Image 1 (spheres, rainbow, N blue to C red):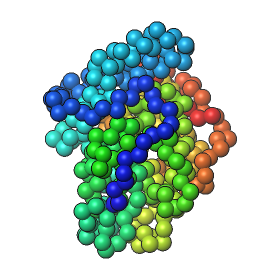
Image 2: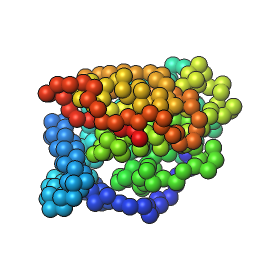
Image 3: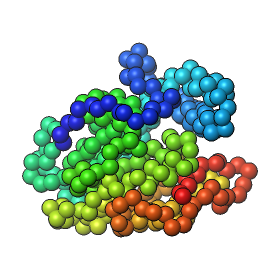
Image 4: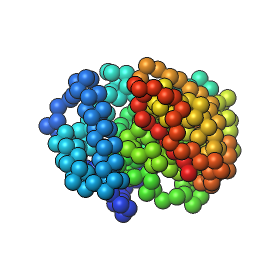
Length: 303
């Protein structure tokens, strides 16, 4: 994989995003502390977004200060990295590799830049990348382009907002698979989640002829690997699996694989529609589909 130089992001930046590197003085968090911090960070971001939307500047500033007091994005990322450590079994990309490895031929010859020397690799865009050594990076299946809002590895992870990434002009700039692993739930706004899903479509390409003979699972591509906390689809007032499936189908996706664990929901969606950004014929508003007092309020909307 050709290493891209870090580019400056000229689009609007959220006030919530700290662009400092993780301090070496930050010690590893316990599993319980990591979960608590991640949950609190999400709740504060959601309340901050609501305050901004309601024009309550004072409350928004107070919440922003609380987020920074907790360590901001850099400590949130440390908690996320801890949660994805191999020791804790948290690398979600292992599920994708397990799904694909049995039916796809991997490359036996990879150079130091991650480029195949004997056959072309599938092109992957990993959004919200925290590590360059996860399962998909080690699988010899993919040439991975990694981006994140707050890169912790300037050489291998480009600091970039996916929503500000320039739209591709040719297949050379498109991908065979996009990974959104625990990314949608980081967004505090249900409309932003729908917009991100919609924006994945023009970044995908039809599988080139050079990759058609890679094995029986090539029919999965182009595709989107989507991972959410399980309660987002199993215990939400506004989203269940049927509604998620309807939203994805409106974008031209078809469910290829799924796995629901006690903590996470994993999906592989194959794109079967046109490659341009889709026009939604049916709007998906925030409507209650799963009533109950103990449900969460996670939602995805499309207009």
